[in-house]
Length: 200
Image (tube, rainbow, N blue to C red):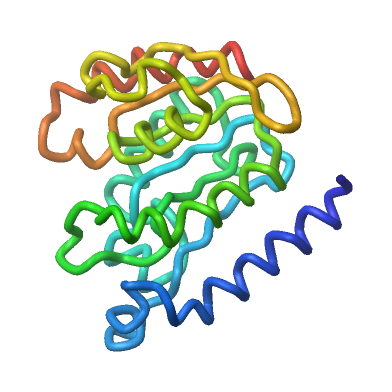
C-alpha cells in the first residue's frame, strides 16, 4: 500500500469517527465541543503506540497525548533517541469519557474496529501498548496466551504475534499518566522504553 493510499484510508476513518452518532460518547463530545482523537504521526511507522482514551486537552485539540502524559511520552521517546514524528500514536477509545473514567466494554466494542483498521493500514512492526486496557485489547486481538495477566506482570516483556501483513511484536508499557501520580513508575518506563532502541 502506498503512502498516499494509507493516508486516504486513514482520512476515511477520521470522517467516519467525526459522524459516529452510534457511539456511547458522541453526545458527551457534542455537548462539550470536543473533537474525536483519531491518532497522529507517521503513516508508515514501524512503531505504533496505543493508549486508552483521550483526556480533556486531547479532546479539546483532537491530538493524542498532548497534555501532561504526552510530555512524559515525548521525554521517554527522546530518552531512547526516537523522534515522535517517526511513530504513530493513537488510543483504543477515540472520544473522551466523562471525568476521564476507565473505558467501558461497550465503548471498547464500538471503537476497537477503528483501531484494528488503523493497524492494518499502517502495518507497524511493533505495537507498544500504554496502560492495561490497550494491553488487554491488543494481546487478546493477537491471541497472546498471557493476555489475562496484569500489567505489573507483563510490562516491558516482548510478545511475538502474527498480523495479517506479517510478524509483529507487542510490548506492554505502563501508561505515562500513571507516572504523574506515582513517580516510581518513571524508572520502570525508562527501563522498558529502552527495548524500543532495537526496533527503530
